[in-house]
Length: 299
Ligand code: UDP
Ligand code: MN
Image (cartoon, rainbow, N blue to C red; front, side, top):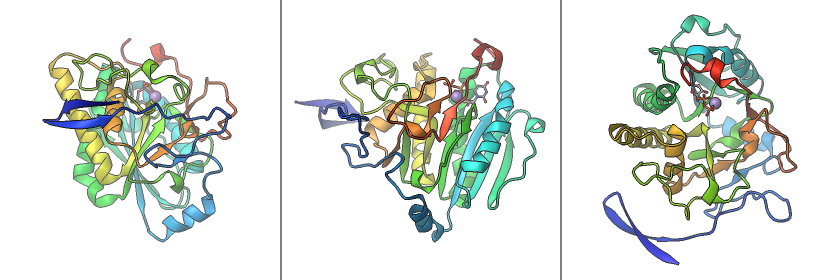
C-alpha cells in the first residue's frame, strides 16, 4: 500500500511497512532491523574483538547526565556502577549538569575517565527539567563536544549499571528499545497521538518504542537529534501543548524519520521493578525504583 505524506515542505512517497518484531515467534531475539541496523543483544558480538577495533581509534565518549533537585541522590550509584561497567579502559568524559555542585559525590574515576560539573539553575517543574535537557545537550555540543569528543551518550541518572556497556554500543546514531513495549503492537505505543503536536505519530506507523533515557551516537548526529527535538519542543510550547512523554515522544518522532544506525536491545535499558524475561540474558543498565512523589519537585 502506498500513500503520500506532506512534511517539511515537500511531498514524499512512503511505503507502509509492518511493525518489525523484537522477539521472533520461536522466542529467539531478532538481531537486525528491517533497515539493516544491528540490534545489540548478548551473544551478537565479541567484546574483546570489538574493543580491540576501537582501541586503535583513541576515541572519547562524552556522557551527559542531569541531576537537579532531589535527583542528586541517584548520582552515587549511577557513577559508581558506571565506573565498574561503562566503557572501562576507554576515554569517558562525564558532563554532569546540576543545580547543587556540592552534592556531587567525590569519586576516584578509572583511568581515562574524567568528570566536569556544569552548574545550571534549578527548576520547580520536572517537565521543565526534562524538556530542557535537549537544549542543554545542543548547547554543550556546540560549545565543547564538537572539539572534545567523538561520541556522546545522554543518560538518565535514576539508573544503575549491572553489566558491561562498551564499544558494541557505538555507532552513528543510537536508540534503545524501551523495556516496557518491545512486544506491544505499535497502535498501543504511548507515542503522541494528537496531530497538533510536532511529536504526532499516526497509529499505522512506527518501528519500535524507544526509551528517552538513552540517546547516543557521533557528536554531529546527536547534535541533529538535540537541535531538532528542541525546535519541535519550542513549537509545541508556543501552542501550549506538551507531548505525552515530553522529550521521549519527540525522540520517537525523530527516530521514525531518521532511523538509528544501531539499536540497543532492552538489555541496555531495563527497569528494576520489571520481572526478567527469557530473551534478556543480561541486564546492563536499569532504571531504579523511585518514589515519584518524593523525588520530583511537582506532581
Ligand atoms: N531530572 C532531574 N531532576 C528532576 C527530574 C528529572 O535531574 O527533578 C532528570 C534526571 O536526569 C532524570 C531525567 O531528568 O533521570 C528524566 O526524568 P525522570 O527520570 O523523572 O523521567 P522517567 O525516567 O521517570 O520518565
Ligand atoms: Mn528516569
